[in-house]
Length: 415
Image 1 (cartoon, one colour):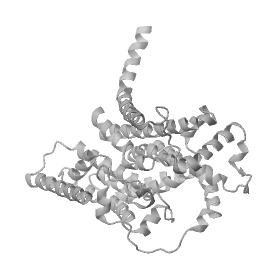
Image 2: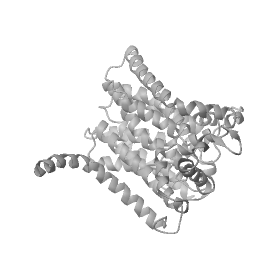
Image 3: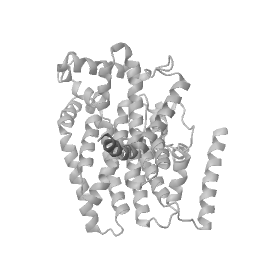
Image 4: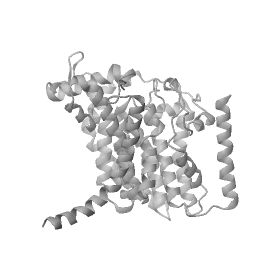
């Protein structure tokens, strides 16, 4: 009997082994960084700085107090009366399921809790992307881990690490993308609907940006998955996506509707109306963020989008558009997905649309992780078709283009 149980357990362990290896790699990288920088619990440095230390830590304390002592604080604010801003505060800062880890720490050890929260979210993003890459693009363990860690440890996560309430959507996005793929190919919607609802409840603000991306990404998936797309078939598949998206939004409405009502009476009333076509950043500034080490702290106040994930991803994205096996219709669809990102980076009016009508104060382009996510997907698709050799002129053109741009960028940095 014992031998039979052991034999049954071995295939299950083998199935989870790639995920454990990926998690181990992510953990080693993050632990190494924490030790090198002396962060809690490996040193005296703490992540409790800027808004995280001055504002968010008080909300985390409120979270513990509400769930353990005064549950009525979920609806009531003693400063602003019934309802007040409390629904908005909970929806924006505290609805993450990861926050339950705070209940295991007392008030004196919340700094360690925040460090653990950050690790769990980054490790979770790595795991979900690894799962997405294996299930959709059938990557092996090594390449899957490289792409997963490029996603979890992209420049966006390090730049915005002091706003960890934004990271939940990063964890759920790969599962939502996989669920969208299943809607298109298998007519299975459970994964998509549930994870979309969870994302919108966890953080409606970043979830709103994700929904804009999904509206374009769904069109790309249709051209990616189906060799012959007619107007009729496109409408059919896209309608399936819209219907399931509305279902996910309906499930999250129990949190979204009271939050929306609270915003109408507070923050939303201060939305500016001076819409114009002012330029935020030009193509050169945007392209510079595809390189390692392109961020400086002052750019938190007003900087170009953070897009870097790895040189490997950048090269494979270029390779993607040269592969003949990938149909031109799919490549056009990929460009269509990238256009709204560029418009948001280039024109302030589109930047504000991405941010729900309000121009962000500090931490600009909070949606740029979606750009990186899609670029990694293109890189994955190119890797999937890597065995196709490029024509001689294509290889020369790609190498020269990358070399010239790299030389130009680093030349500008040294000036």
